[in-house]
Amino acid sequence: MSNEAEPMNVEEDVAPSTDPAEAVPSPPSDTNLPENPYARETEWGEDITAEKTGQLYKRILTEGSGDDRPMPDDNVIVHYTGRLLDGTVFDSSVERGEPFNFTLGQGAVIKGWDEGVATMLKGEKSLLTCKPEYAYGEKGSPPKIPANATLQFEVELLSWQGDDISKDGGVLMSMLQKGAEGDYFKPRDGTEVEVELIGSHDGRVFDNRIEKFLLGEGCEHNIIEGVELALKKMKKTERSKITVAPKYGWGHEGSQERGVPPDATIIYEIFLIDYVKAKESWEYDTAEERKTDAERLKEKGNTFFKAGKFVLALKQYKRAADLVSESSASTDEDKELVSPIYRTVKLNEAAVHLQLKDYEKAKNACDTVLGKDEKNTKALYRRGQAYFGMQEFDSAEKDFQALIKLEPTNTAAQARLRECTDKVKMLREKEKRMYRNMFEKYAAEEERDRKESEERAKQEAAAAASAKTEESTKKPEEKVESKTKDTKPASDDDDNSSQDDEIEDSAED
Image (tube, rainbow, N blue to C red):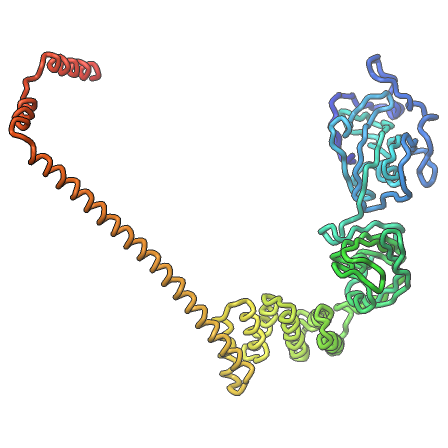
């Protein structure tokens, strides 16, 4: 039910009114139209506007089930029939046999729907009576909806689901309470957050606590990825509910500590109590300050790396790299100050990617360093490892050779070079065998064809010799008779046939 012009598939023209006094259409002249039992205001039900302005009424026709109602940003699915007060149907998803879906609270539909559907339970069918201010206003939506028209909708709420914040259905989020007005900041990695968490599975609460931690490091506090994703969408004092698939929860293993079984879909209610923003890049006054914080993040990343927490380490290195990238340095002196730490954290990024077997990203991180320092031995070594993991052994061999040229006694590089050389030899031998087998196959096929051709020739020669022998053994009288048959004069029938052929040829010409 869009709030744009001509939002509905309607089939009957209704001339728009130009008189504001005609807010309620007069009774129809067509006696075939059904009588509207809810045309009178006394039948409209309850005024559900917050200020009781009389602009939106709701009458429940069929009770719904449960206690939950759709929240802003939820995707709701409904069936509806829209009527003028005279009973004229101007649009109906029921008649089309196609339910209608929209995002609640985003202005995708008229105001009466955004506010009215938010009050409904699952399976509920209600009559929403929308005055012009909550429908199409003074202009209406010609030709079906007159100006200043009061509209009625029978709406059945079929289902809804939260906002898909993970983009794969893994985390569905519904807002329960709006956040602070005028607060437009949303937490990101590095923000210190204080949150209240209530986690449940099949109605049983397994987690109820208040926790303070740095966003991006939730796993250090037994906080699942789904909760961190949700916090990045929330404002201070906002309360939301999320439904979390196993991929973003405790996965195939579950959580014995929390009593969550394997492959469990869980629900969390999250209240963002407060946050302390991490310092923004543009808030640093000097390159020295950037360098200091980048080194702190690097050391934190190193701690995570040594503990085998590679994803957490990578987050620290990336934040550090952002602080001291070339774009952050305004002068040559600043660039000279931050470049060494930038190279270090990029090399550390490469080391993490190698551990995670993300060889392409490891190579890219090394490329960044070698683009500024082509003789950087660590970058050559790690890029060689990345190429080796990508099975690009020729490229890996070149990097290790370049490294050994710079450091002839580097035993690690020598060992990897030998591995590369062996791999290259193996691949070339494999290629040779493949081509040899291919050529042998073709040669065998050609030999088979040749033998078959020779066999056919022998058979044809034998058949010809047999025929010649048979001819030479015939009796003399058989030969004379055969010769006589061959020299017999043409009959009259043959002449007629020839003439007929000539006539047909002439006719064809």
